[in-house]
Image (tube, rainbow, N blue to C red):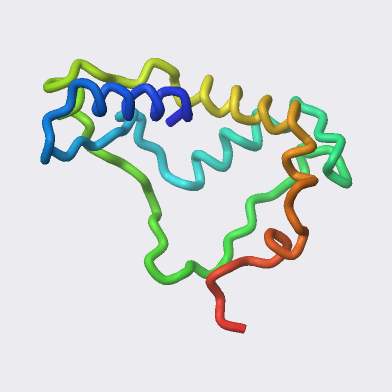
Length: 128
């Protein structure tokens, strides 16, 4: 789900939600991790990332790694309650949200410069 939709849902819950109630905030656009990765690769193959050492091309392959404990294979929520009780639903499609997210990262390279490479070079959650 695109971040603007999520924020919109939180505002709706704050102003219209019932105290003590729980609301699942989801897009009802269910997708597994492999297909999400394929969608992202399709988007970035048409973009130029100056901060990458090489352009993403047709030779890029998806590499499967050992799953971490508790790994989710798919993310899906039933968000019918928030639609029914508060009239909220996501407005931005998964494809459009991914495209806007990728564009944000392309246009905000300085965001990456603020992080230490030590934080994201190695996979987290594994025993050393």
